[in-house]
Amino acid sequence: EAGVAQSPRYKIIEKRQSVAFWCNPISGHATLYWYQQILGQGPKLLIQFQNNGVVDDSQLPKDRFSAERLKGVDSTLKIQPAKLEDSAVYLCASRLGQGIDTQYFGPGTRLTVL
Amino acid sequence: KQEVTQIPAALSVPEGENLVLNCSFTDSAIYNLQWFRQDPGKGLTSLLLIQSSQREQTSGRLNASLDKSSGRSTLYIAASQPGDSATYLCAVGSSNTGKLIFGQGTTLQVKP
Image 1 (cartoon, rainbow over the protein chains, first blue to last red):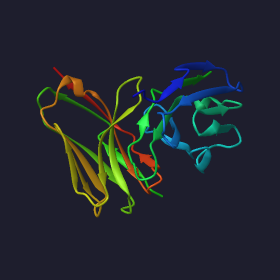
Image 2 (tube, rainbow over the protein chains, first blue to last red):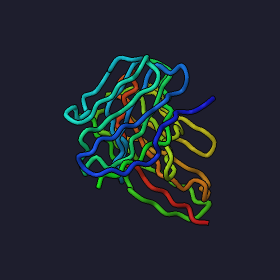
Image 3 (cartoon, each protein chain N blue to C red):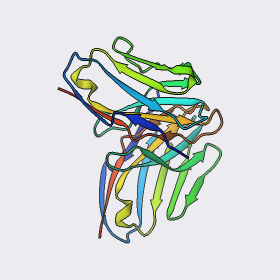
Image 4 (cartoon, rainbow over the protein chains, first blue to last red):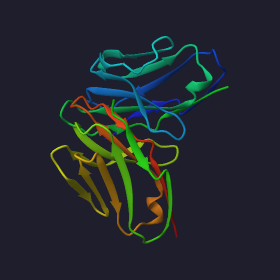
C-alpha cells in the first residue's frame, strides 16, 4: 500500500513570494490533515478535511494561508505572501475515517523563507 | 486549552539501557493518546495508541502507560538500541475527529 505522498520535498523562497505544497493521501482515506512543524517544536494542526469539506481550520492564518482538497482526494496548501516565520516543515497526514484513529504521515515539505 | 509537555527535551543513553520518556497534559478529558517516532527528514510513524479507557499498550520493546487523572503518560523503551535514536512525540486526541495536539518531542540518542 502506497503511503502519503508530498511534493516538493524542499522549497526555498524569499519573503513576500508565494508557494504551494501538494499532498496525495492514502487511497480511500476520507480525512486529510495539514500540520506545520517549526524546528524544535511538535506539529501544529493547520487544517483538517473530511472528504472535500473543512472540519477544522481554526489555527490556519487565513490572511495568507489557503488550502483546498480537490474532489476529496489530493490537497494543496498555499502561502501568499510568505513571511520569515513561515519557515517550517509542512506535514500532510491522512486517516481512513471517523473512529479509525491512526494517522499516516507523509515525509513533509521543508520550507525556508529568506 | 489543552497543552502537552514532554520532558526531557533530549536524552543520551548507552546501548542496552532501559529508559522512560515522559509526557504531561493539562486537560484530562482526552479521547486518546498516541506516541509517534520521527526520524530526521521523515514524517511521523505511529508507535502506540492508547484509548482513554485503557491504561497501557505494548508493542515489542515499547510500553506506553496512561494516567488520565494525573495528566501523564510514559513511554518505556526496554533494552535500547542505536536504531531507536530518533525524536519521540506524544500527542493527545481530544475528540473522535482525530485532531491531535502534540508535545515538543524528546530527542533520543542511543550510543553503541
